[in-house]
Length: 551
Image (cartoon, rainbow, N blue to C red; front, side):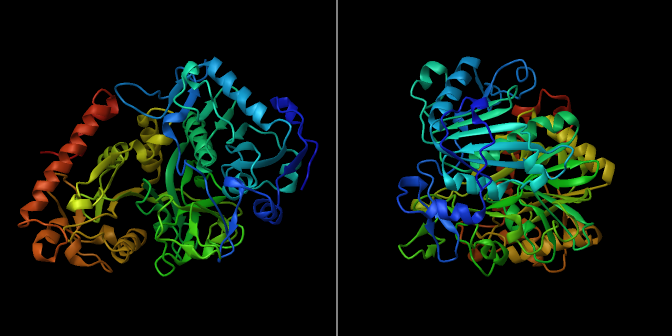
């Protein structure tokens, strides 16, 4: 729909030839597949009906190019990048802001533009009204999928709290003199409440940009902001939240046909409970298998948007092809999932306070148990640690894993110090008697990933409370309490040390079960070193050392 009464000259964008305002999916489909489009603007229709687009050299976020203007609003509140503790919040001068804003205004002037208004946050009292100004149809499609659509009445009275200028076709030629990292820039101004994106086509910069802003504003109001997925039971009462870094199973495990999905990535926790920030999901699709992930597979249809997925000329999809990137994605509106809270037990994506907090880690060292029951102190320790790991490239048999410690399972999106997020989470957990668990979706002594069947069995036992009735023991070095028997889960995998008893059954090469101890000590030391480096000088950190691994 065209709406000429939006005056873009208030943002310094002039000569606009046409505004396509909050376009329908039908319009978007026509716009992104029409004749004459070239390069990354051009979408290809896949066999499943979803359009596939390519994002160029940026197939993920560009963290080194993320900047925040250092001014009176941000100077004393933002958790800035420092030599002691590196993060993605790099300082930009007011001059650099003026320059990149100018580049964006020039790029977007004298053009036919898409303007999408949407909300970030399902709770009306704390949501952020966001206006996206873009020149590429599929970028408008992406934010239409990912943000909450206003009602006609809300649309008529829409007053943006935040404005995003996406000038992905422009470049910052003079980036060096501006003190920026490259000719690509993603810059935030907390005073003006604006984001400028230059020279990256990756859709996730808009999604994660607004997540970062919610992560700034909400905790300052005493509300927990979390990089997690969330679901609840069919009555909408037994809520669980799943924290985890990319590739640990957040989307897969929260998209459960037996339960109702609240959201797959970004949530808040206030006095009313858990609420989604988004109106859609952004799932990884590398090696997507219809049998093991039917809900996500089923969501890939008309109106969904595939990113960097390889298709042949007939639109046939090869989900295993990672020649463009491993980070192949699909965005889709949340109503593409059959079982969601919204429309089933609620008029929005929200549910009561969480009964279970689940930390997901993919441990490639083969050390952590598939599930551990955490004490309140351990919950804080593992939340601040934010551990996962990756198996390195396996050429010439090298499989040395690389650990990742990302504070609060989302360091890239934290705008305030990690201890602030821990404080807000602990406050909510204590007030609601919530229980916490650490679930390893990674590898064990067999040299194989823990099966999705066993992991789902564990998650079911957490939801039902059966895990709290199970017999338990503690494992050495980490002091984690683990169940020794759990219905629906293979008993021999519950204690990771047991998976090292017979080296002949393993894909890995080792002599005997002492291998677990060797690996456990190594991983424990990594946790200890990471925590000491980042939190030894904080009050909260000093009190939590005893909750971590001990050697």
